[in-house]
Image (cartoon, rainbow, N blue to C red; front, side):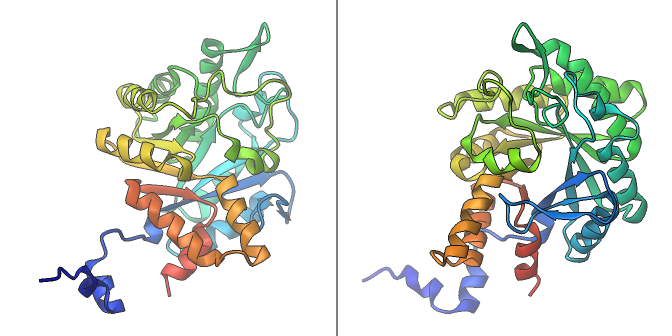
Length: 321
């Protein structure tokens, strides 16, 4: 007798019936970049199809995403000025704070998440305070907590610390709770590798380090057990959702973290992953849409409950057909 697994692949209806992994628009968080100005929708050269929005246009974009069934956005801000401490990151009239308030005012049911880090706001481009030529972990915690608190006051549903400072989840949780923002969640970039896949984002967010690199605080790509330690620590400190970043080169890490975690696991399908698909698609070397969907399905299959992806809008268009 020949065993014939192909019987379960014979037709589209049969394949749909036995499919093990299902991708949904509800899985997506769409990253958006916001800048000062009015009526701005400026293309990002390194990320075709992505834009720098002003507050008024980012609200329109959020409305389009919501109409497609995408439940959440994460916001990254481009400040009007920078300094050594990144003080515009916690300004009450900061660009992210304005965008949060505007989106929640128009779409109160949309989940709005804010990136919490100093790199976009510091003149040196690092994710924390510099002392003696190095990032000072503990001095940075107070500033991250201050930033997160202003995001919560503006109406953010979740704050998402991406800095990789030790103890920042606990510092932010304590600051939020002390000001009666117990309902504001923390989506932690728990496992963030020092990756070359961030290149297009750093141009989009104007956040490249002006000296050195971030390997002293982001994770070594060769390490896996360390990822489990980072995830456990962030859960212990109060993270409501933990994230692995990047996604595609670290599918094994997503799987291992999913098996460990008692909270939802997110994965960030980062700018370099997006840009490579876009570039190859423009050249006609790949079927861009099929590669996009295969990539997102693989991230979900690896164990991600939530996917942050620049493909959110395009993928939603396909899934909604």
